Image 1 (cartoon, rainbow, N blue to C red):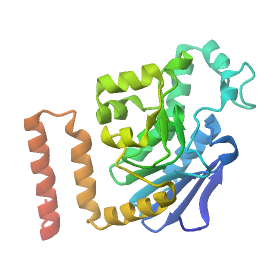
Image 2: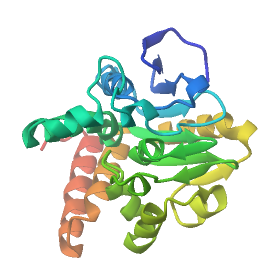
Image 3: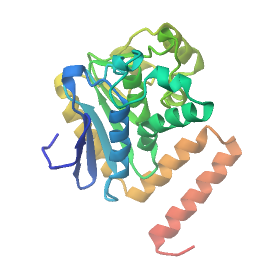
Image 4: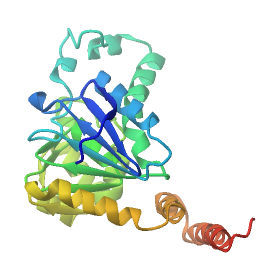
Length: 263
């Protein structure tokens, strides 16, 4: 990716913007881009900092792994300095615990906004929170060495960072349950064949492939992409007839816009 002055660079997250394309990079390869509440706050801040010109957001990571999941210090009684440990969270009220998890989830929700298309470029390990961060994006391009795994259930937890909904949507309930309950690795070939990833490429081609995909996404008019994404995102929650009606309404807006006729 091009070297640009960062809009944000903190807590293991760097955001750069090149007109219509923003790049969010995980920048702690020495710790395999392990995730923490501070990193999640920085990811949420990156989403809020996107200029209105941005149409495509690329999520990538430095080093040999995309993200090895939660910083293991979160599992210790001491936790991470300045952050609540799991023990601290467990001792809080139901409302405080719910609010804390909701705050963590904010880092994973903005990637599916209708006004952007997000692409995760994933190499090496994407485990637990790393897997869920890749799932947060609209599209996934993976290196041939990728290893997805959802390890939360194996640790006595559940995937709670907004990853279960897209996972079921991509691979179906039965396979999603099997992946989560066993915690096994999903490699590149299976990821592509099951719809978990859009394409797999050799590791050295990952950035170039994502760049080409971003360029292809920018070729279509922005408003048409926004309307199309909104239709597809909402399709699973509508009946067949409701979806037909949504298509008609969206197309009417596009026709009027192209013709320069106000509604």
